[in-house]
Amino acid sequence: MIEFRDVTKTFPDGTVAVAGLDLAIPPRQVTVFVGSSGSGKTTILRMINRMVDPTSGRVLIDGVDIGSREPVALRRSIGYVMQNSGLLPHRTVLDNIATVPVLRGEKKRDARARARELMTVVGLDGSLADRYPAQLSGGQQQRVGVARGLAVDPNILLMDEPFGAVDPLVRAELQTELKRLQSELDKTVVFVTHDIDEAFLLGDQVVLFKPGGLVGQVGTPAELLENPADDFVAGFIEAGRPRSILR
Amino acid sequence: MNSYTAAFAWLFSGKNWAGPTGIGQRLVEHLGYSALTLLIAIVIAVPLGLYIGHTGRGRAVVVPFTGALRALPTLGLVILLALWLGFGLTPPLIALVILAIPPVLAGAYSGIESVDRETVDAARSIGFTGWGALWQVEVPLALPLIVGGVRSAVLQVVATWTVAAYLPLGGLGRFLYDGLPVRDYAEMLGGSIVVIALALALDGAFALVQRAVTPRGVVAGRVSDIRTSTQSPDRKERTWLAPEA
Image (cartoon, chains in turn cyan, purple):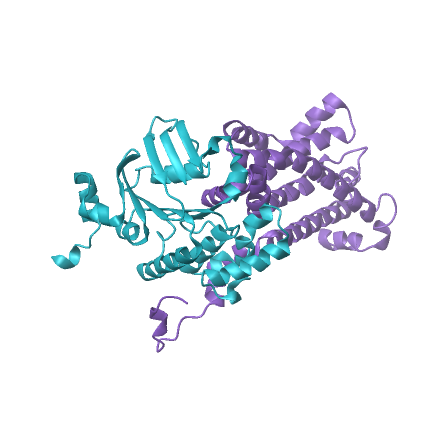
């Protein structure tokens, strides 16, 4: 369980990214943060692993205020997957996946062996183990990113627009793959996207943000579709539908 | 006999290579001074450059300052320092360290700055410490540019030690200083050729080092590599339309 209690984030230039956020993220489910650019959703996600610290308020994981936890140790216990994979370009696929276990002091051999298993888990061919990220397709890179996020078997997996930069066919495939993985692994997943379709497809719970880090509505996809809280929510959902073919 | 044949005759005469004032000894001295200069410059400039590149701090002060250092005429500085500190190794050494610092510093900070911020942010997000990200991510990726900075410093230092090496110092410049008063142009030209050959050889060696320290994964991403190592799908095969395996 991840809780935000009256969390506010103001950047030095005066921009209010998050204002008085109260939110509970249930364990072992997929919670999707959806909203347009500048709605603070990535900032909120990055508060969970202390890449961003709130200006005021508290973030709790299983009841413990993470402000009291050492940021580096915290980050090593939470999986993180980002857009454009964020892989280390000078390390092979296998070493990229093994990065965090090695940072945590695991033996390189053991970490690599586990990395090989994880390649299978995320549907990567073993022959890619010694390739470098630049030699992979965008979809393959994202799979490596997911494998790296899972390498320490974390309870929490943070995903920041992980499928934002791949083509629609590959994206659909990765989405399906993530649903399959989640049904096997039961992680607490927090997933950021600006694509409402993706949010409804993946989310057990969807949090729709308004500009300025305000929560528009929290609920299951069905609740948001059937009972949008206000015009903004209804408008955001409507804007996500394909329009061109209807004309 | 024109001056070049005389110079090469001087160069290939065995007696000019031997002894305490021979080419061999002078070459060793020249390399020694140059190595010492570079070592000091690297010890000062690389950590400073890494700090500036990693934190972005101090850039506004250090960059214009080193730019100004570059503009100092080295020979004038040598003479100024010699008048102040007396003769010996120290004045030219200081002047040449000042000459070598700007390129090494520029290589170090621009190398770190050239590393994709997204990659560094990703490294921090998955649990690298600041030091860990610097040594395991930023430095390896910046190394070709860091070595490039040292490489251009090598060229300048090796060339400039020639004019900085007056009495009581040695080095290859001595052939010019010693040849000039007695109008031994063969010796002067021969000495110059040795300096040129040394500079070119060192530059070539550093080019190889630069290539060796370029991470394979970075080379792998270059267009030339992709073009040669991947094949276009067979046009008759329709499977390339299907999502990747």
